Structures are given as C-alpha cells and as structure tokens.
Length: 396
Ligand SMILES: Cc1ncc(COP(=O)(O)O)c(C=O)c1O
Image (tube, rainbow, N blue to C red; front, side):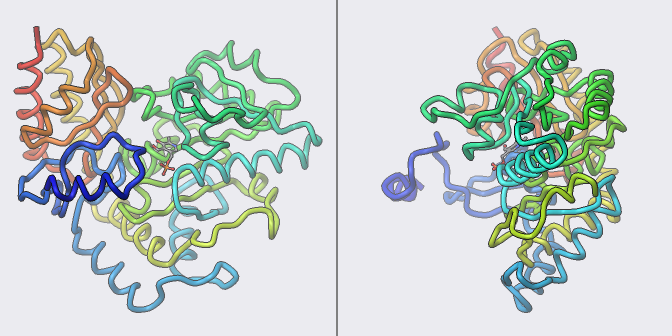
C-alpha cells in the first residue's frame, strides 16, 4: 500500500489531504483497501454511491450501454438522456433539464441561466446573486465565489463580481440584501459542507414569496441533499416549497460523473441555442447510470429504505447524544445526518478508519453520516457500535 501512496504522491497534484489508505474495490456498503482490509462505508464517496458498490443492475445496465454507444455529441439526440430527463421531469416541479458533469458545473449553469433571465426581463444590471453564509457550491471561479465560506476563496482573488452573502435562516438579513438588480437567490436546503444545517420551513416560505414578488430566480443547490438522500427524491419535496431551478450531481449518477440543472419552463426559456453547452453533458453512459439510480429509488424501495433507516439512525444518534456529553446536537434528514461535537472531529474520523469505519466531518466539529442509500439496519448497527467504541475513547 505504501508503495502506491509513494507513487501517487509523485504524480498526483497535492490538492487533497488524503488518508493513508488505497481503496481498491467495493461491494454493497463495504470497501477494501489494497492490503485487503475491509471498511464499512458511511461516506459513500461523499453522498455519491447511492446504490453502494457493484449493484448488479447498475453494472448490467452500464455494461449494456457500453456495448451500444459510449459518447456522442449533443449536436444529435440520444435516447438515455431523453429517458432520464423524462423521469426527472415526471417526478418534479421542473420542465427542462441541462446536463453537465459535476456539481460545480450544475451550479454554474444555474448561475448563468439566472443572469440571462434577470437581464432579459429586468435589464442589463440585473445580475446580482445572493447566497448563504456557510454554504458550499463548488470550486470553479463562479461557484467558489457563490460559496459562503472564505476558507475556500483564499488565494483566488479577484472573485466574481455580483455576489453577496447573508445569514442562513435569517429573513431580515436576506430582505435587506435584495435590490432591483438581484436576479437570483441560491440555497442548499440542507447545507452539507457547512455542517449539515437544514433550512427552516418558515424561512423558506418567506424566501419563496419574496422571490415571487420580485421575479427573482430561486435556486436550490441539491447537489448533496438531492436524489433520495433526505428520503424524498428532491430535498425541496421535504419542505413542499418549489424552487425555480435546482442543481444536481453526486447521487444522480451513483458513482458515474453526471451533473444536471433543472428549471421551470419560464426560467428555462432564458437559454437559447449557443448560450450554454458541455461536450460530455448528457453522456449516454452517465445517463444510463442516472436512469438506473432513479429506477431503484422510485420503483425498487430505495427511497422507502432511506426513510426507514434514516429514522432508525437518527434515533440511535440521539441515544448517543444522551449518553455522551461531547455530542451537542444531532441534525439532518434521511441518510444525511450530522452530529455536532464539542471538540474537533479530525482524530475521531482517523480512529474510526483504523477500526474499519469510514466516516467524514462536515466542517471542524460535525461528523457527517451519508452512507449508501441501500444500507440495512444490521449494517447501521455495526457502524454505530464501531463509532461508539471510538467516542468512548475520546470522551473525557
Ligand atoms: C451543495 C454542493 N454544491 C456543489 C458541490 C460541488 O460539486 P462537485 O464537487 O461535483 O463539483 C458540492 C460538493 O460537495 C456540494 O455539496
């Protein structure tokens, strides 16, 4: 294993502080490193591997598509992207889909669409976007600017003009920031990287009505919390408040790179041929992956599993909070849960890994639970027992 890490360090750019293990293969909710050590995976590629690893339908469908068509230009229609779009549209409040390859690109597309919409309907200066503090929207120049955490922006000045940041869940702050040049507001219904912070329903209702009143595009960034993660297909369905635009990625492809930006008709019309594009967007393999994930979520009981296991996991985490003083809060929905500790999580995460449990932080003091959506109760029990043994070690 050390040899791989040595070789990797020589040739892979130093942008991640990687753990010193080499993951070689996976099955179900388990991963194995190159020394053969087995790990229970509560990370799922950071909320990506919705169906876990080696799901037989997933492997079969992508393999079949691989023998038919691997890539084709968007200058031509392709069947998998049409079929995937139909499922997304039939099961949401949106009318049109734009495909790309990652979360940042999906948010980028939402930003571009909103700017075009603002300028078209309210004049050239209508391009300002309001985002939330503690948010995370990606690493491209526009999305890192949209991200409401300075730690991701340091060293990349000058940032993009036209962005302002308001306190999450604080309507007065938002109201004061809105002006005649505001074209969009962007919100993660559950902030992921910022620490598993759910938005409040009453706040969201007010945001929706102020957007309606001022014809502002309401964008939900569901890159992390969408696609079944919360127990609903879209996180907005939890709140019953419809955005105009949503960004998706991560779980949509279940491990295959795909991003999507969905919009309601009136907003979607702001884009005309030539306005936006992506060579790989709507790739037939990626869309086949997306179709398989959605089929399992909607028709094979995976969404119901998220609701059931999410409820169980949350109850168990609340029990741990009662037992251990170091846990000060439990929050989130479905299988996107977080516990806030009164200490840094870094060493706890490392010790869990040593014991065979992969888990990650969300910010410095929150541990995030985002396992594959197919996880069973027995696997949750196994992970929690490992986790509790580590918490015991760190409890003072
Ligand atoms: C809410 C949210 N938006 C956007 C992104 C960026 O996605 P990607 O890393 O695929 O570009 C992330 C990634 O963590 C995210 O959590």
